[in-house]
Amino acid sequence: MVGSVPPTGSTADPLEPRLTELVVGLARVEARIAAGCLAAGRDRAEVTLVVVTKTYPASDVRLLAGLGIREVGESRDQEAAPKAAECADLELSWHFVGRLQSNKARSVARYADAVHSIDRLSLVGALGRATVEADRTVGGFVQVSLDGDPDRGGMPVDGVPELADRIAGTDGLTLAGVMAVAPMGTDPDAAFDLLQAVSQRLLGTHPGATAISAGMSGDLEEALRHGATHLRVGSAVLGVRPPLE
Image (cartoon, rainbow, N blue to C red; front, side, top):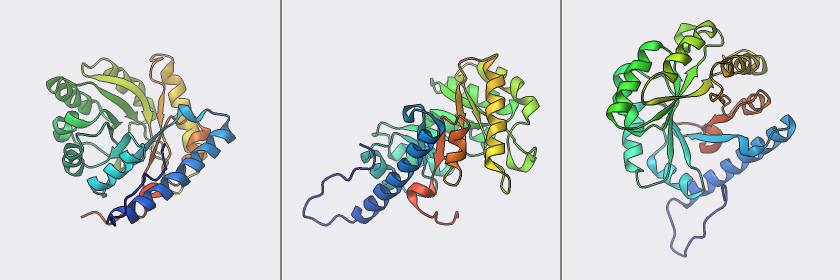
């Protein structure tokens, strides 16, 4: 059961304090998700919690796996690739959620089961070739820009249909749905309402693309109100992140 503490022996375990922290963090997040689903009239089973472990060690991934977490998110390949290799014995699904450079596609395709951040046509080709080469299939999300800021990544709303068509038509990729980050300083309800509208339009041509990846530690309730199926939560589970090197 997610959030339950496994029994410990009499010998002191140096990871036990960290395990307790993760149990508490997971319990708080699960309570928020349950309350958010209840308020939105949704079934908790409709929602996938992706715990984003960027900047945290593989030992945390192992502890999370022991607590029932199976969906793990990462945003930098140079960190994610060795961490996924170190945890290859665990039954996990890896989600790449950060901006992806085309020259990293081959590496990401070897371990990622889903890429949430496909935001340009050129990346589709690179990722498709890499997945075919690796003999794998990866779920692709169209990352949508909700404010048009090119520095934040994401495809402008009017470019979503073409990008979605390209993903759906590329060997090695399946079109999962859409993803977005609520722009800082804006109303997340309004942002996720727009993302939900984009998703609804996309379903007209791609009825299988039902996933909406939206909501993080600070705005998961708003995302749930607007149909989020995948929540990308990091600090609310793992604590305040150490600085990136």
